[in-house]
Figure 1 (cartoon, rainbow, N blue to C red):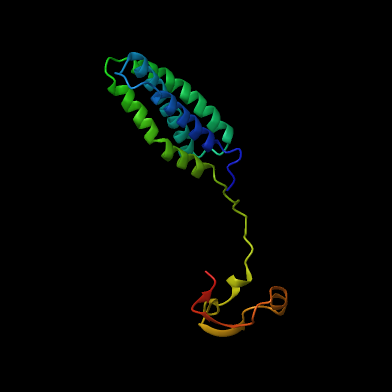
Figure 2 (cartoon, one colour):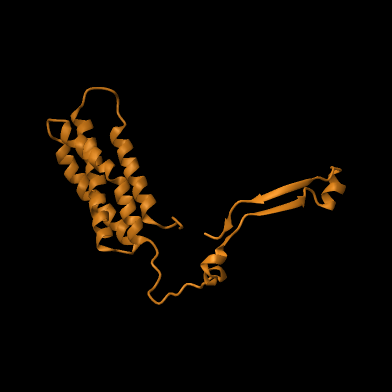
Length: 175
């Protein structure tokens, strides 16, 4: 599966960037600026995830709709997160950020599942010769073989002494 042009890695990168920006700060007491940053980042991530999960649940196939929906959702979620981050308690923006980070992987899985390739209904895969063989012919009994270790060219080129090997095949088949 090729990830080129797929919206899922971009969405994951955006979510990771926002999470890092929200958590990047000094080790000091919670301030209103840190709360607002957590709220904006958490809201932006959650907003984009809500839109992208909804699109995936509906079954949207076009990649550009995920990108546009993610950006619009991130904008709306960021505005909502700004107001959530303005509260006196640091808990709401922290919970918003943690919850949105927890939904990154399920969102990624949902988008990839919804946009994965589905062959058309009239597609008929070609059968391999092995599929036409009866089930008994797929597995072979163990075999014992005695073989030379080196070819004549290898003995001549590397000046090694010829030896014999015992090859024991325990199980051979097509799975």
